[in-house]
Structures are given as C-alpha cells and as structure tokens.
Length: 231
Image 1 (cartoon, one colour):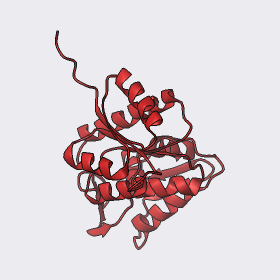
Image 2 (cartoon, helix red, strand yellow; image 1 turned 90 degrees about the vertical axis):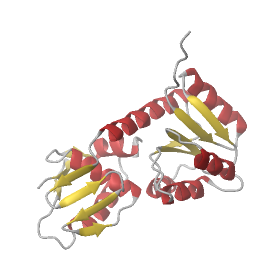
Image 3 (cartoon, rainbow, N blue to C red; image 1 turned 180 degrees about the horizontal axis):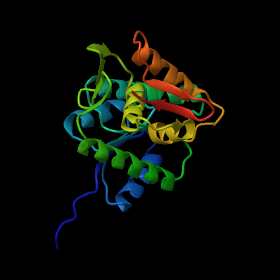
C-alpha cells in the first residue's frame, strides 16, 4: 500500500500534557504529522532542528514563555504561522502576542473543532502566500513578501508583523472598501468584540508610517463603512 504523505508538519509547544495530548490526537486524526514540546526551551530546539508548517504555542510555560519563543523565532527570520494558546482573555494580552508576530490566538478553554478549523485556515493562508508573487506594489510603495520589508519612494519603512500583514491585505485588495469585521476575520482570524478600537489603532499606526510625509495618501477612510487603499 502506498504511504500517505502527512497533510502538514505541526509543532505543539504546551506544558499541560493533557491539553497537548488532546490537540495531538485531533491533529493526527486529520492526518497531520505532529511533534510535541512541554517547555519553551525544548520547543526552540525543535524549531532550530526541523522545518514546520505550523506552530501551536502556549504562552505560560516553564523555562521560557511563549512570547519569548515567538520573539526569538521572528528575530531569526522564521515566518512559520504561529497560533498562540493562552488562558488570558484581555484584549491587551492578545494584542501583545499578535504584535510580536503571532498569526492567530485561541483562548482556553477551546473546542478542538475550532482549533482544527483555525489550523486549516492558517495552512491555506500559508499555501496562498507561497504561490503568490514575491512583491506587491501600489503607486511608489513596494512590499517584499520574502524579506518582509516595505519601501515607499526609496524610503525603508519599519513595520511590525501585524502591520505588515495588514498592509499586505490592503494592497491585495486595493480599490476595494474593507469593513472592520472583514479586516479582523482575515488578519486576526478572531472574533474581537465589535466595540474594540483595535482596528482603528493599527490602521492609524500604519497610516502614519505609510502616508506620513508623503503628499499622495494611499490609505483612505470610507466613513461609516471601513477603509480602502487606492492610488
């Protein structure tokens, strides 16, 4: 019988062994190849040894917490999709992880079906990026998807991981009005409280970096609807 190739190789970094085992069981039933680490240091060792398609990373762990692991991972230029797990539920805690470079967030307790749905979404997103062009351009703004650098008019613009993802989404949907719920769904893949101003905060930061000092503005507010990037 021909051996079936695993759908993806996933690393779980979670110190609660019962939770890790539950996640592993659910992933393996979906035919993913899975490795486990029960502290941050072991997780970092595996990340240095092997190439993964996705990392499921808890925040509160012994030896090295998840935020430290994530920060080191992104500092090394590793852009593997990362889903953070945490018992914390405050928006500011989620923002901290997302700003460092997490791609998604799941608050404990969670349903394994939801986790699996998020895994599928992140893997689809990763596959789409791999198949896309390596640069995106609008007007004099260029986004390099390989080096994760943005330049406008020859000026290098420093962006956080989430600002970069937001800008990439805007450029891919240039000349389209994007409402706040659509942006949240595609960038954070998370149902934030509709009353939060997290989207406005991020867009204001991005607008200051992208449009600040330039006569031609690229990011526009569509009052009562959302935002649009247009030349």
